[in-house]
Length: 568
Image (cartoon, rainbow, N blue to C red; front, top):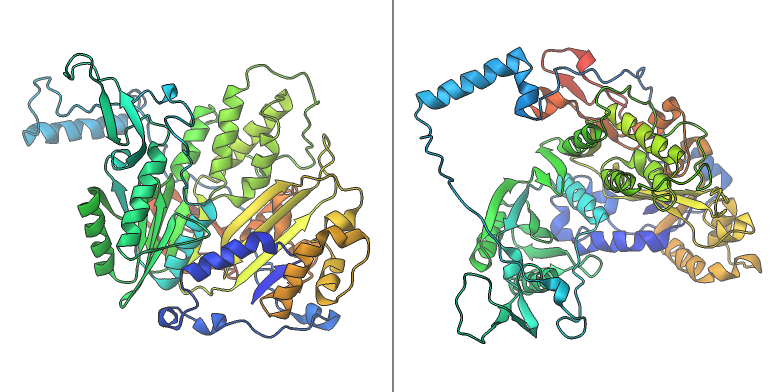
């Protein structure tokens, strides 16, 4: 049963649900490996929606836990130096470097002869000389979607599947070309006078290089017995007697998950025989995501990326902010005279948008800042710096996908009315949970300008539930007939159950509104968003439990010092 809280964003959720079906989560063969498999036994009959049922229904993730008083993240050790010059200024680091050098010399580790161990060079074609329609036709190459990556890791954690990572060596050189492309011989490579090189395979620099590599990899995987998802072409599955093998591709980085380690090894051996790979073992660092797997679950953070952003903006000594944006701040393109140098701001906003991969709390704020990369004012820079100061208060926060998680889908969605001061367009925000795992969220400005609240914001009120549960239309919502019929059919089939919740418990509000620090962290705590102190990355913490419904601490320090742990 898919629960919708206050809305029907089914056109966004259908690909996600079908993606789960692609992973064969609902087959009886795989349910043997899933805890609480009765939760997903199949669609249930429609549940009548009444005022009494809505008042007594227990809604997932909407219980407000008794949160402890918020404490600042205590730094348990001095910051690590980023270069030799910084380390030289510390007595402790200086002594550590001296001990290391002494040990290396004692072990006769090197001979200081000035030689270079290895040189690396690449031959790159001048792809900027290619002509569309002559030297290439298509150049699009798919990559795994962010929601697919999160669902992949969440499901692997629920199934207790180990996730391994491999990297393909010289990936772009494996693709075959469909066009006749000729290249001048590189300097130093002898060919007879008047001759050129006709490329048979793809080469770095060609516009279609990534596409041809993806086609070659896909053909090899299909020949090996994998099935390609129709909803994310970078997701592949292979049913076997030992369990399902799931494989996720992002250019030349590949994640492999399966209950059987031997099956993972089998896939690695196949890839190595076809392309030559670098086996990275259990996934730890994928697309800038720091992944930690344990028997309790899987955590994903971007700690290093956050530290780099703070350092690059020069805010290492700045005071942390308690919320992503000041309460009540309204950004506009006409707040002051526009600034000319926008490149640093654009780069920062782009990094903040990517950081929202694991920090849903900054999604709305980053979306707001991204609207003004073409008309930058001082207030926008101040807003971006405020958001970076908020990151300084939460460098170790991220998502945690617990093991033994249910596989039911719950969606929250809300919308405002004409909140954009420049265009008077409305904002929509939604978030989707797989069990207790937050796997998808979005903040989006709607395309049309709403003259009336109800016709456009069909998904924002009790009237929406009435339309789905009853067959009636009138003139205003006729332009929504297609979406409404789709949702109504799913409602009758027992696939979706619309429920109305109060604004206090509306988790989607965090993707379209600004809140004070206490309100902001109250919503985050109900979304399974936790803090992973730095000492945890070094093995200093022991995980007890972590659940969005659990009001106890998720971690404890081995020396029983509770001040080193922060849970929001």
